[in-house]
Image 1 (tube, rainbow, N blue to C red):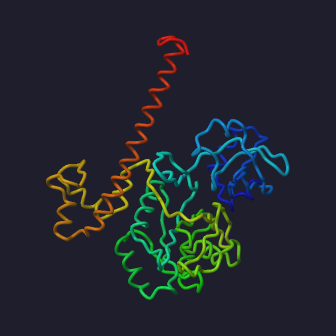
Image 2 (image 1 turned 90 degrees about the horizontal axis):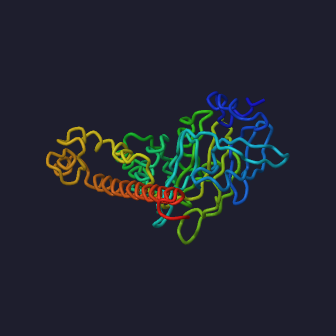
Image 3 (image 1 turned 90 degrees about the vertical axis):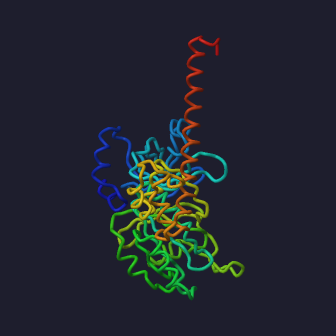
Length: 352
């Protein structure tokens, strides 16, 4: 019966994990997360679930279930208790907005991301570069969908600009309203893979989801007269099974995408031209800021590398390095505190 979960992304690798758990636990996938409960798709249907105590109180926020996660639950029809989050193969996260250094998980177990950006006031190449770095770090392959071709008189130039700026990424010009370009975009989507729609509020993510679904599955609002773009309606990250056999997670608008990278090298590898030039630098650990013999700086000075691309790289690299240093310092302080408490319990520094 578990084969009925295969359309939702279940696979043989996950199947191998089941013998390690009690038989009364059943697997399911988180379809959406509400404030106090989780909607979980299982082989026998959907369950509204709550967290077991050991999950609710003994886990970091990033370790709790998120949309896209595979979990084990104890069914108490029609309710369920989530007892375990199964290993994830990808995690897309960002730094919490503001000065906090914590990591906020957006979605999990995603194979591909469709970055939706409007060719209106929403058009922002730098934001695309930033999100591509986060996807690179997460191991999620990107697709760029430049929406609202019907609203821009410069759509051809805008699309060409992104194609030149990001030559390693597939870029599609579309209109989710008129249907222009949708056949080409949908033709790249693979059955059984999980996709996530990412973009700002009003970029047209929910409209695109409805177009790909060939039905109204997400509510959208009319265009705003004041800002000239669609009003934001999506409030939860929700997973849908599309008629073409793909899985799609719709998300609320993401305007701020502060980097929270596990590997800061993801910045350089996103900028393919800089990564290529870096191999020609005199020093293997060149920071590309002031070193003699830096091939990247030389390329900028010779106008072989666009200075705006170089500046974007430096900005994102500084941000990624700052987050990594802050996280390392936080871990060190936590380790020092744990050691202090342990020594106090042993009586080395008085009684606790």
